[in-house]
Length: 142
Length: 161
Image 1: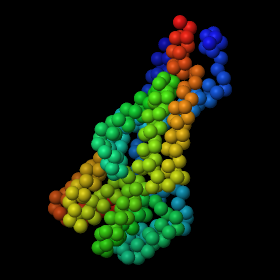
Image 2: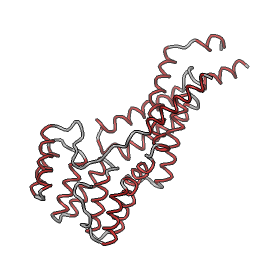
Image 3: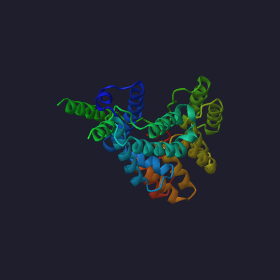
Image 4: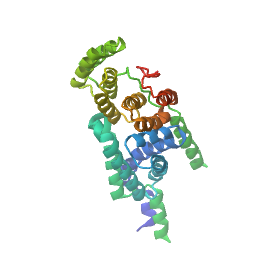
């Protein structure tokens, strides 16, 4: 790899991947923060209890941390595949257990978009505008 | 330290967004996107419901739902009317539909708990109390008192407040 060239020149695909990461990152980061710091934690536990998610309190902590940390990781582009994969799994559960009975338009559509975006990122990775790419670049230069 | 400033700005934006109020739930509200005809039928149902003409209110709520008004408030209010005319099993099924459409609907948890209490199922009533106390402490307090007394009608407020 030519270090000097790939350090500063980004392709349209890299910008596209940055955009693909930015949307879900913002949504998950804010929703994770709402659960952890914004008073939505009890509401999440209540939701999980209503739809019969096992160990609702522990699962609410897990989901809150996953959304906050996962959103942050997607934003900066670090461990993108792992974070996107876990968030995709969360969205799949949300669609099946909560959103599906509510229909698609105005209900499941939002989670479906997030699921597909996360699945796409699981396949593509973060692109070159990311911490991951910077770290890989340093390793290859060494 | 430009990156430090960006980090502080990002955290400030997140904290500002976390301060947004949670969505309010009101059994008299109609969500956006419901057809005008369904809204009219729902409002007619509400007027009859307020005057305790439950059987007639049921017809209007049914009509609202048939006209495409599949929103949780319609199912919740329909269930309330069925409960008040003594059709507890039917009301429980309708509360379940309301809760499937909006699992964090405080009034539906309150009322379905009372329906279970009317059936003598204190355990399920308590389960919904446990959910409700995480959603609306004041409603939950009133429900707990009803459960303690074994009286589903104690503090039973038709509009949840």
